[in-house]
Amino acid sequence: MVGKTSSKCVTGAAFLTAALLASPAQATGTIACEATDGSDAAIMLGVGRLPILAVIGAFVTAEGQDWSLDGSVGTQISVGQGFMDSDQLLVDLVDTNIEEVLISLRLYRNSTGKSSAEAGVLTVHNVGAYPVMCEEG
Image 1 (cartoon, rainbow, N blue to C red):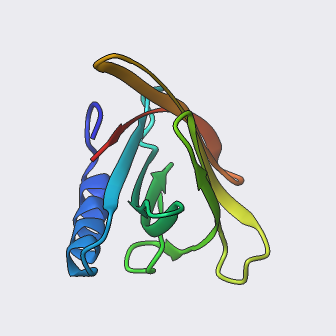
Image 2 (tube, rainbow, N blue to C red; image 1 turned 135 degrees about the vertical axis):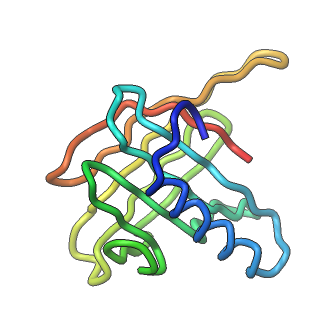
């Protein structure tokens, strides 16, 4: 994870890691983002990448609230939609009735040679919008 790590984010990361380890082997990875504004906002996604983006795990924390895809931590959410190409990643997470977008991640990438950067905005409905920097694993 980027920068300081909150205990809630570590707990969520542990749950997500356990879920990913229990999943069948496939082209999977993680995307971990933390707010750059000093808040505790963070998102960690478990993703499958063949042939399209599939969000297979998610943990989000912001302003003392938590959300997770499997409901093991905080409020349960569902995947609304996701898109990824070489320049951007767009993910919307919704309530379990699929009535409202609760969380969105808009991540933009740039790379040249061996250098790359990933940054964007994490928006949590009725909570806030946070600038984030991310790492993929």
